[in-house]
Image 1 (spheres, rainbow, N blue to C red):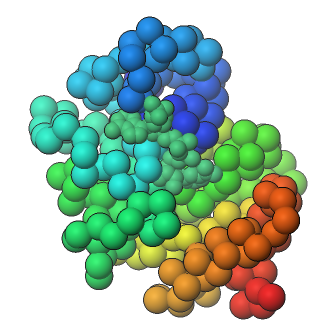
Image 2 (image 1 turned 180 degrees about the vertical axis):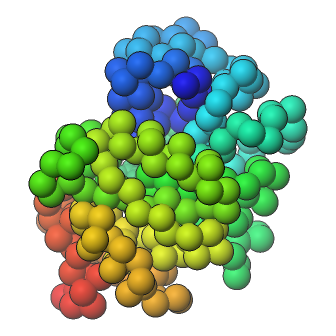
Length: 248
Ligand SMILES: NC(=O)c1ccc[n+]([C@@H]2O[C@H](COP(=O)([O-])OP(=O)(O)OC[C@H]3O[C@@H](n4cnc5c(N)ncnc54)[C@H](OP(=O)(O)O)[C@@H]3O)[C@@H](O)[C@H]2O)c1
């Protein structure tokens, strides 16, 4: 497939290099000058593109940028992008990083992103840590394969998202429509807890609306209270601990 990726940070670059290695034709963009972007793109096996070029003549557009950055993207960026092009979004809202955002209250994070972009999105890759994505993929059917959830309102687009996730080494669980996507937002039992498909399904069902933000903030406080930045294993353990309601 032809895939345009906006953002070459921790998540965007990992997805770009893995999809490129899997045989997809990948273009990337970020905020750097073209010379720097070309170096980054080459290291990922991708082509460098401006933000206007990255959305052209592709099957999938994947946004992987900070939540607060969407409102500052070029207006009408997707105006001429055909409706069949699949728009995917990996983002999460963290108030300490993203600040207060007008229009977010009362919506799921992905509903806000959809409104901001003017297009429905598929929410995917938001509930997997960078380290997990990079290092813990497994072949389909292998014991202990980690799953991530996919939310969105277009079933055909969700299927393609699931195929890409599979190519990167993970199972997927259908998390329903965007209105239900709060179930995989930060602070929920499904958020970066490294579960298999059956466990993730249970975690999505067990989420309680409204509990995510306080749990998300408790996780951040716990991270900050540690003498050193938590290891990957510690992060997953803290996320699981919050999910179990027993953060100390
Ligand atoms: N890190 C994780 O473990 C993780 C896991 C799941 C989901 N997420 C979510 O996924 C999103 C990306 O996370 P990340 O950790 O990859 O972030 P990151 O490392 O901070 O990278 C962000 C990328 O977005 C680019 N960017 C920012 N504004 C842009 C704009 N206006 N136009 C084009 N590119 C722009 C940055 O460009 P420059 O390189 O030029 O600065 C950078 O490449 C976030 O919403 C995050 O919450 C993160």
